[in-house]
Amino acid sequence: IFNIFKDITQTLIYQNDLGIIHRDIKPLNILLSNDNKTRLIDYGLASLSSPNHGEILYTSYYRPPECNDYDIHDVTIKSDIWVFGASMFEFITGKTLIKHETIRKPYFIDLNKVLNKNYKDTYFYPLFDYINGISTDLCDLIKNMLQIDPKKRATLDDIQNSNYFKNKKITIVGLARS
Image (cartoon, rainbow, N blue to C red):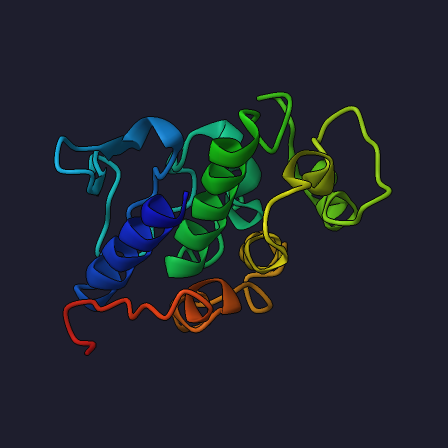
């Protein structure tokens, strides 16, 4: 999990330095190569700018709250960070964060409850039910990536400087970073 997280974070930093928003991060678009490097593929929905209203973005199981029901506000790297967090949740648990593809905006309002230990709902898989035994640093990082409000959501710098990476004494570099 650590290497997947590190490699995709590095990819996001690199593409952000180039002004690219992937707009379709999901486990099916994250591949492990023969040399044990993780690759982010399928840039068919990628963009150098925000989309037009009504444009289909992200696969529905992974669509960030700000893009739900095609009510598109500002699609930014923060949107990619949310779907990356949802993808990491799935890598760890084997389950999608959202149970039903038909879920729409009202359910996202309650997603913060999912990030709490004692929450049960028929639409979301409680994070802590599946991540017990995984480091607190990793849980905290994923929770920060899954904040409903993009302004409160982890940034690439937050991810890079998180305890999850700091405790492993690793530096993630992108195009314009050292």
